[in-house]
Length: 83
Image (cartoon, rainbow, N blue to C red):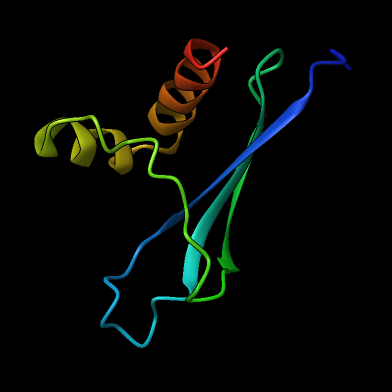
């Protein structure tokens, strides 16, 4: 056990007009040992989620979202950049 804090991130997979809008992707990961877990999670329609990928160009965003490990790497570096 590396004793690093577990971080988490949730993002919407469906557009607001979709009936599946509340079905989101949730990730949790450890920065130290690089173990991560992802699952479909319910997030209320009224809850606003922070889009950590918003600053990425569309092509880069799509590429990051294609591989869970790449997403976790990006999120981890983004988390560290935020302080």
